[in-house]
Length: 637
Image 1 (cartoon, one colour):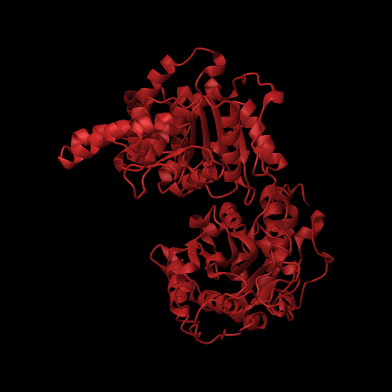
Image 2: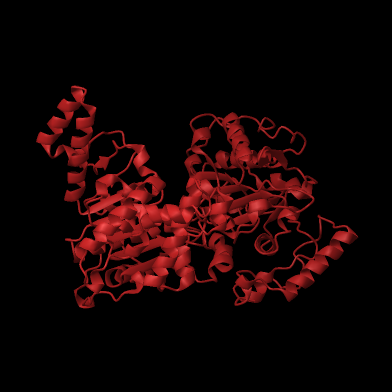
């Protein structure tokens, strides 16, 4: 039957500030009743033992009436120091005979995934880093399965920062046949099977509600929820949702947090307040961190996740999931070297199961990554500010033209295309242009989102609109390597970046190495030559001011047929590619290069001719680059 959902709760109870205050006092009582055995001491119990009065006194040093972000920051800072002082997470684990350990069966596990399961069975604290495409949620479900198989008597609390991630956990466990109950809002049903199982009390609840006795009905409903939770071995919730009052009298000796790097530290602490003795924290601190709107809170450390802090402190060894099965190897190549020191291996992904997307003629038959350079058409400086956001009309029609050409071939479903951009103003214009270009349902199936909103998702084809294009070379938060990492690792079959090469070049830490690498693969397409790479050429330079897709004829739909063999054969048949004169690829020095070119050989003759002053500045930057190699590359150069 369906997995039971509990949703009829007061949303105010899911507020982290509200529940942290209540949980701090409740935790003191819980730890007093816990066993005194050193191996059974609740993990992190000291973090929330201080009273609400003490916290308020501490925060009053900042302000008599501190805003919520300030108080949460104080809680995070205090919990950080107490956990380090107590060393709660480094206590010896109970002795376990590995010969008796039963690992999950059914769904296959890779070597690093098995290692993570064994660590969760034998250590009080397990940290798992899951780079893109390595199966973090799959591992989380496998660990829960292993816990259940080896000791089904202990209750498990499985949480994630978002409802989407928590739902993914529920679906994964359901596929494995593991009984669980999902606690949270968003369900269409008031009380599902588990609550109805207590038929007598459910009748009482219905009768009280029908008679208008809502207070009494709420009490009965809460009792039904608590009993439903008590009966289930595995409870799934969000981090903040695990602090609901219905959990107050329950002990969860095993806690697992998925996507832990995306949650603020106080949210990660909430599920630990239920007598946790074994803790697994899964995430990737190399991807996007928690979103912190308060500069004061960020300055006090609230933008550092619990996972990142643990990894930085060396409190426990980290289990690295080092086999990715999402991206074509050429897509994974640069992020692997730039962000993961070349430690990630590509498994079971090749041209056979990750064929090129037909309709777009990839410049290199060996690469599924390219840059469509708008600066080559003299469009540098085309970004426009709109309030606190920005947009770039010059990038919209090229993206629409690419989508139409891909639609003509039909080798990829519209639901498997993602169009990403870092700015909401550009997102709105892209959405409007797509809706005006394609008829339903295709126009709605193409997903348009910000990079931040796309973490954890994947598509066959990703098109990225970089937006930033200015004479100052400012790229704003595109400099964030974690945002760049997420953008480059969402695609399975192809990544197309539409942007201003000259502006992006100014970020010498991340974007410049990427441009050098793409250039060395002869995969930079000047905007003036875009039609050479489209099977259905529809792009024209003139009417870019509107940038709403009106320049292009409306498409009837995405074809449902598969791309022809001829279309696939054309995928690598690019015409001449132009890149800046004197382009050199630093990747050749690393010994990891996947192509055969001399590092001293220019990639092409310069369509983008630079002024003498600009050339002198570029040469000085190159000399500075030789003197100051970025830390991330020291082991590779």
